[in-house]
Length: 189
Image (tube, rainbow, N blue to C red; front, side, top):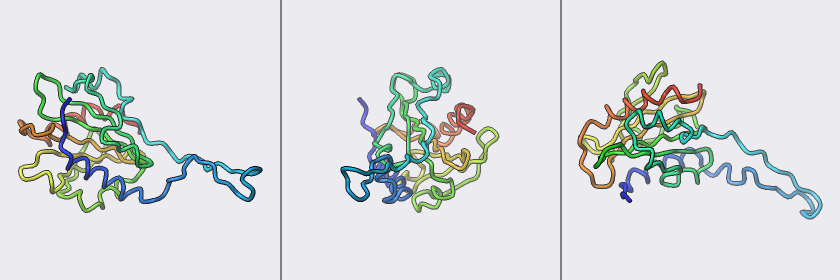
């Protein structure tokens, strides 16, 4: 099993934590009122984000990713309310990067306000407006690149980053743009 750089996942999880705060910790849990033995109310679960692992395996393979490396909840992102993700390594005998597709019920504006999401550049992914960015910790030249897309008021993030200590053998921004373009048609409207 490959080891992936922890800095990237610490930053992703920190971003998720900043966006979720402390809210939602009791979603779907019974809340007692008065005498707990006779009366209780259930808090309604909030909206669920899109599950990126539902993207067809044939589309993932056609985009140049290895479906046998699929990792739902990579880096524990779903421990934060309102987040889901799915990750695949690039195909080939010695892939140098992985693609993670993350989904959140947060808005694109909320996400892009996070101080770690810098060097923002407007781009198009299919017919959708999107923003490409690099985080400062990704270095210069960057070892990874991200594209965030507004999907019906929620956010989908395509992340390409190096696997563990692998060298960057290509342009991470070209790779993430290719995969986002290939997979965009499988996202909700």
